Amino acid sequence: ALFLGYRGMKRREKLRLSGADVMEAANAEATREDGSLKLLELIGRGRYGAVFRGSLNGQRVAVKVFSSANRKNFLSERSMNCLLQQHHNIARFLTAEEKMSTDGHEESLIVMEFYPHGCLSEYLSLHTVDWLTCCRMTHDVTKGLSFLHTELHRGEQYKPAVAHRDLTSRNVLVRADLSCVLAGFGASVELTSTKPRHPEDDDSMAVREVGTVPYISPEVLGRGLNSALKRVDIYALGLLYWESFRRCSDLFPGETVPLYQLAFQKELGNHRRSEDMQVLVLRDRCRPEFPEAWKRNSLAVWSLKETMEDCWEQDSEERLTAQCAEQRLAGLKLLSPHTQLDNHRSLCHSWRSSQAG
Ligand code: ADP
Ligand code: MG
Ligand code: MG
Image (cartoon, rainbow, N blue to C red):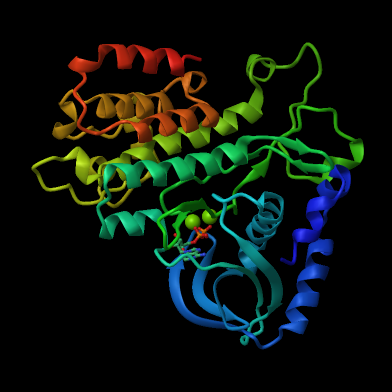
């Protein structure tokens, strides 16, 4: 509730929302609530911090603690959280504070809603899911990403397009009702506005599309670097789909559902080094293998595989946009996983034409 006040702000004011403004608000809150924030149990370790189950005024919350070495990621996660609130598929941020820890180090805290099932990869390693549930969960992730990637102007309100840059099944959290939210914005960046910006707005983290004619490179002249960063997220989305649907019981009729695996776990084992990834993914163009059971001709499986492949295309320009992936998932939800493909050529055609472009 602390940051609701920013929603009505003018675009420029909002963009210039500095760390100091946010901290002022956060400190006011922290002082008032001093002593009421308790850390109870370590529930996860991310790349930039440790996550605890805690309580704030008796409400169950999750608290992410960043060490001073990761302060930059704290700042970016906090400002992203402020920009991105108000979407059902984005993790809910409650407050942030900076303080001295008991051993005299500076610590930064982000307090957010507690998601009882933890991250998506945790959930999927413990549970299998039926077709509709799996479609809903992955659709939620896609809706969150599509919101992230979209620049929005709603009257006085403004939300820049944002690239997540660390989309994984560990950065998706699962609510009690199995709906999903995107989290882990420590590496995210704001992308340049397509509308002309005021020069004073230049203190944001946006990746600028700059250059001097005729020195501007073809990729910037083309879709631009902003779009390249979005397509990096889409590749990861394809892998996340694979991990999720491999745990879908309806896609393994009459057999045991395979155990949860991270993408490329089979190929690389648990020691995943980027040199090996380079050989596997870049040179050999390898992608996660589809299970035997998916060779059967169900329309749902066929469309699903096509969607994954369209996300993890080698040529990034060929990848789906998040909006397009969102439509695909909405379409998949309507299919029965058992409908045979041969009987539904026309359905197939209509799927293709409805998804064209
Ligand atoms: P990092 O950005 O440092 O990688 P994350 O935000 O991804 O950190 O959090 C690390 C892990 O902690 C997650 O994968 C998840 O298991 C757990 N976690 C994070 N936030 C929450 C939350 N709000 N509720 C429940 N578990 C969480
Ligand atoms: Mg993480
Ligand atoms: Mg993260």
